[in-house]
Image (cartoon, rainbow, N blue to C red; front, side, top):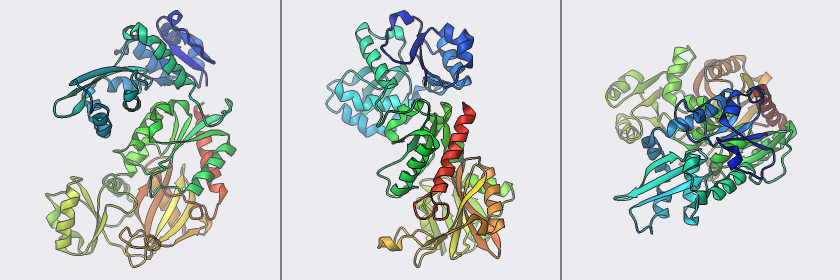
Length: 482
């Protein structure tokens, strides 16, 4: 991918970099060649990112042209609101406290160039701040009263970089642009990142499935790498992001999806799908408004929850809006149980979902990709349990029920039509629609943006073709953006 460094005085910056041009902002903004070129990576080192400055327009026009730019416009906007960034820094508060635990002063300020700080003990924190604020040069200041907190963070103008720091900035830039990979990528191919969490006890894809995804991606024509939450700053290197980690809005997976989308990457799961699918309150309203059959459901608050038992009757299901993998879901059999469970659940959310209990021997799961049915499974209830997963089971083998894979052409047509109709309300990504079948009617329980695909289960019918199909869809979407 060709690379551009945009800076006011190119002659003052000599970089020993292959496939890199250093040009002025005026040249980037005005010359027709840069307006029509595709697949450019742009590092914006302009002296100012202020609204309507040349630096601001370099990033704005880069995004409009489909170029991958650092910093992006969303980052420039974020830097206008340090209070929001201070809140974001709470996610790594422990790292902040450990970094400064031996600091004799109550205030410290340091510069960060592409995630690199001058002092070795600041390295991990500098990398974390660069992941949070994707700007080439930033200055962070921390202060301490009762504990250390991020006081301010702002971009540094090239004019503000001390002369002694310029070699360090150049070195950090070279390292950033030419990071080492596990293999020598074919420059003619597109680059795919697969986001995983090696420490996740219940990932959406097991190791065997991940290996099959990797193989399918290579065969489709991708340079492919597995990445983790520590690789946020590397997203600009890729053309597509495939998330195989449990997603949530208040989570790094959502930040990855948003950042990747803002850079113009093809993203599965895209941020809009994550936002819509991970909240059951939203799904309840969406499905009801579009007349898709669901179990009788109510959105309840602490103010109106007392009337619920008279509307729905016992037993019923009580759900946390953002639960996943059957967690945050309770079967309520009595008024006392309702009072006890709702009290703890309202501590986490102002709204809860109450849903009528539809006992069935199994739940249907329909996998849908880009508006087409990909696979169909029956998930049977765990032993002596009302859910497909029993997290309370003492033995591992009793935790989950059996799974039966069904050929798509053998599945009920009403099931497939309902699944496609429901997912079309969300988008054109990869979804798993959970449904109950009662009296030949199909009730949508929820739509998952990050459905399970495990080796020997969801791929039992299609085998390698399932993985090939997913990669072919991603590749087609990448090519359509080129």
